[in-house]
Image: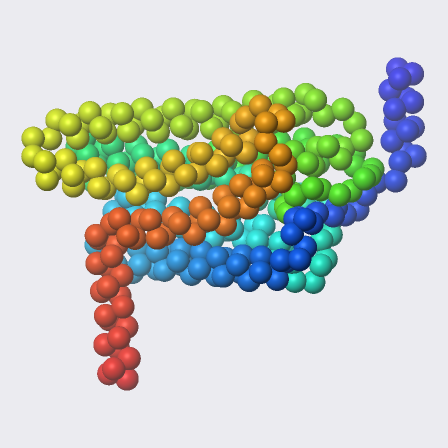
Length: 323
């Protein structure tokens, strides 16, 4: 009881921080203008590409299928995901203001990890969708009904929310009384925990355990789905049939491989094996490049989407000529 009383008195006497400083990439100060231009271009392309995908899926009746319903979800998530951290990072590069309020840091960190977790669940649902499409093509639309698609989508978003919300509440119950410099370009949970003026060992273990469970449970289900898909494809008698079946999965498999590789590198690896600077670079690439690649990968590898885009462009061109 006396220890608790002393700890409480010490906390009451502390001056708690009201904002954090996002250090970003101080070693690249001389090329901040180039970084700003590059990040801005990627951000604009990412948002534009994903908006085009969503608009195409919504407006073209031939794309009103389960696969494209999930693709629309993924594109919508990509827009919010890249917007959770990039605008603040761009602002810090432009005017040098690297401060962020505690509330802003909370919102940014929650949004980033909520959307990242949701993406893993969505990709798992999409792998299940591809399995059903190849395993039971004649019953595909019956099995993957609108109700089931909505349930899988809602479950993905809600699962990501609940997992990250609990951790966010625990993190921001911690006292932060200085220093207030976060060695990252956004409110990453690892550097943030180092600033807490209390022991965070058990919370770090909890976050690591939850992240590991989410990563490996979703990756396990995805691997099982693709193992079943490969077995099904191998049973297809014609070579052209096997190639067509596999081509419907290659885009999703490319996105899954890229995302899981980056996330496992950043969060599920032994400490001390990679420098924090390298971790920040990989995190920046994952935050910017993955949402950028998604629409291009799915567009370039999918004939239906390319056809729908061409139809949309043709309609707009005809409309302009008539006007």
